[in-house]
View (tube, helix red, strand yellow):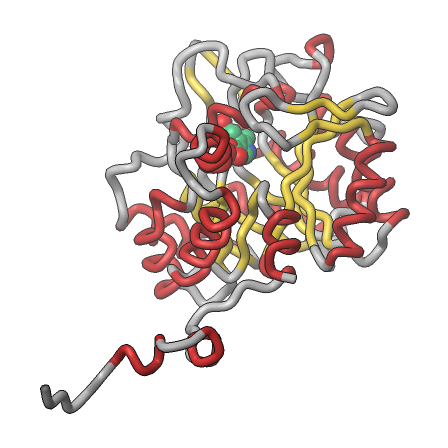
Length: 324
Ligand code: PBG
């Protein structure tokens, strides 16, 4: 048989395969989401996220130190607010002594070089479990943006490196950017959840923080998963309004969107490999139907290949271990 070209030559052994690999994962690709609760010595395993924990702040600090020593450069903080602090204004979200603000300070004090990012949305603080303020059964945009600005300023004040608005209200990136300028927070960045879809894959996360919407769904603010052009529109708007990083979320079912956004903006793109995507792999592995380690590396490499410069993933520590 005569063949002019034999493509298998570049696949013939591990050495050549690694030499011509187009995509490689490194620890600095990852952002580790962390769940923080009140209390002490608390390490609570989330039932729908086996191997993943909600911790009190003291335990969180130990964990974040370990992450830094492993090579992880960034954490994305979520907190669980007690029910008695929830209301429809979300005012606990900008309490200077709130759990989020205390956590930011404590992590920056303990590991100053760690890039601390914070979730900005009202859902953990909302008595309705929605990302915004509710009036007559509707999630109202402009009053919510005002609340998100206060929340973002309080995170910047506490020392956050980046705020990460995940609420999908219109105009919040521009409003937050402007408030940072006016208040001299000129070093605080914004990672915008620009293309965040209304997805069933957030289920386990809502268990972790007890933040499921009390009525209806999030489809009037999060995007319809049938749409692609809309993601580009959202990302371009956030870039223009002053976002430093834009995000696509979820990741695995949205690889086309990640690529489309990557080709459209001139700032880094992150992708959020969400709780349900974590749970899928864990569940199949538990059943013995899939090899967990291989599934993790294949998934994360695919997300990066599709165009993500950064990946928020609950598998960050596992991936770093597997890579070393
Ligand atoms: C809250 C928020 C959610 C996630 C990140 N920020 C849930 C939601 O929008 O209902 C999901 C993260 C995950 O599933 O891992 N605004």
